[in-house]
Image (cartoon, rainbow, N blue to C red; front, side):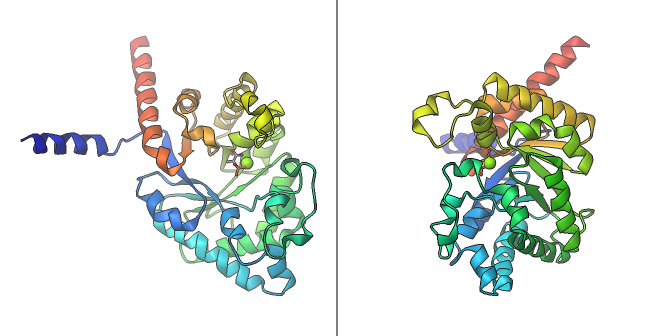
Length: 313
Ligand code: PEP
Ligand code: MG
């Protein structure tokens, strides 16, 4: 009898919680796709492809120099497909390459990486994607192949945007590669104060969604290196300045019908998630082990908001 009761309790606890705010999951390695999908998450809010790329036998630019771009595209395609397939038809936002130079240096062929005093303020993200557009084009070709196979659940997300012209140029390259953005979602990360402050102009270029990269947004807003232990005590995603930028972007995106999400570490913290749901964020993307906890938080906050509204009627 006790066993039966326990079973009922377990079933009740593990029953899926439906929320209006979507709860997604972050993925760094394609092999985690099955486990991530098993959480029942509403999609992948961030697929960091650099972990897959850093795990390859050589640097992307070395593949290109060696005339093996097709081999590189094949590797990207295989990894992306694993994730797109595990989640189909739920959306999978693939972030274009974003690794700092110091991480690339450890790879075969990485010895040519520039030595930078501040890699986090350096040659990474969209800057690199646009300057060394060969590897960016390789990613687009891999995505195009997936779309042609019917995986229209993949989306493209650009990292470290600071100016609308970066989005414009990226779109131009995507078009040159013959990938139509009519079929798939296209968006940017808001992870610099600059992007948050010029979001209106970025929206004008044409995007479907934005996602807050609060790890970077916090470090750049507060001038606190996210990898520096000496200033770790100052690192706070809920600092009023960070929250103000987020609130501003959510409000403006809502006015323009652009979806908002978060994929930084703070998306796994219930206290931050609660505030974002109150601000009206459309989705939250958490680490695999935090999905259930975040879902519970979202459900609780949504319930509270509905009750508050009803009481005012
Ligand atoms: C972020 O900056 O919050 C983010 C999700 O990107 P990354 O941690 O990979 O820089
Ligand atoms: Mg980032």
